[in-house]
Image (cartoon, rainbow, N blue to C red; front, side, top):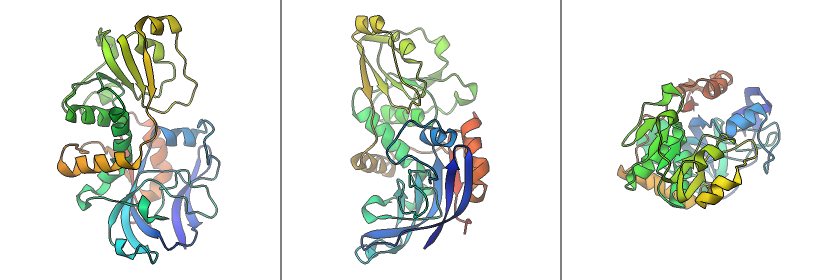
Length: 310
């Protein structure tokens, strides 16, 4: 069985080509992908070759962990799932390419348990569920955010989840093209902020040099949450952190319960995914879509449309 997939052959070498898939097992499902998202964090590092050593890392690889599609076939133990629209957090079904993370293809085969039912009404917005689960996992692990650094899609989701939980965060953003789009919170340039008593700072900037400036904004026993992904080692100057008894927390990868929670929040209207997909390209233009997603400062979220790919 074949699929048409985005393949990173080497850093900055990407094409769209057929790949053979492994046979479908009794507990697996075949999904015709409709939409997939491009991550400007982990996928940028994969694309540029700056991804730190990571289990399963290597080229050629199929990227992507943000896909939505329809189950069109299934093994004998999963026949009841045929017809469902589902979210897929990646796949490892390819014979001749690594599946890290493996979701950016016209068709994928995954264990039925990894295919999460979603509302038909979500359409392309369904690709945002992985980032929403990442945001939920970060917020659920500690204090509500007082300050969020970065108004990309993950920063916006952390802000929206914090507001839904009763918080009132401030968001820092240096890119003037990303100052808009706030929903129940304020977005400002950090140069205009003189506060130095934040209890909880969530950094989603990916900037490995930012910790000293954030420590200086903490109150006593304040917490810095590392909610982004960093391609370089992190460090900080000890005396200011010592004086504040600063706390650091790493927000790890989301788990299935996080995905269930945000899926329910979206279904009930507690969390909106509106206005977060800013750019779209047909899958046939993937080679143009990836650089645009990484280099266009106005691109909050790029989605590939696979519906006419085959």
